Length: 258
Image (tube, rainbow, N blue to C red; front, side, top):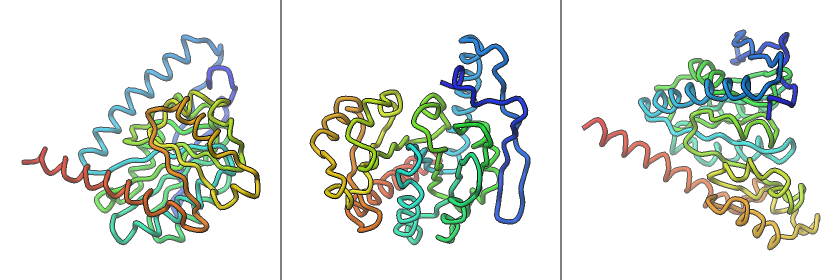
């Protein structure tokens, strides 16, 4: 993972962006010796903060998604269409991670929901501490569902728990049926796998049975949704799943407060 990939640079700074201001957030940790011991220490620290994040969001009755994929898989379009379908039934907030630019954040803001951008520079994943600091820039009292759109990468984000309730991995039909086999750690850690851009399946000769077989083999624990954000195929089932989860969180919170 990041113990060897070199994504951490001692000169890099992570920034948080809201529509009206930029906030210097974190000096990412460095890997001067790139040792296994250093990586383990970093992950242990991240896991501790992620556990704190879980309680932080649960206390506020917020259900959290961590959405991961490779670049170009259609995360932003899918999330935009998801928000458009849900925002009248559940209050949504978004945290977006990107190496550079706030293009995705601007697209998501067009839905009318609050969005905070994390620009990571050379950092190829989000970490729990970044999520905590970004969340503090959101109106959490008015959010039921928090969507974290992670940096486009199927390697490093697999190792970093953010304190989410669900980890969702996207597989675009344009990427090929063997994507789960190439990135097993990410798919094995997913709660939900979404096969995206199904409207292009025939055009790219997508082998659906093989793709599903690979997903079942690598991620037997994951629920699978086949969707097209463009045509709406599968979007109702996907959104109903999220609504059910948000309502379950609200009911659980009410029971705990009795």
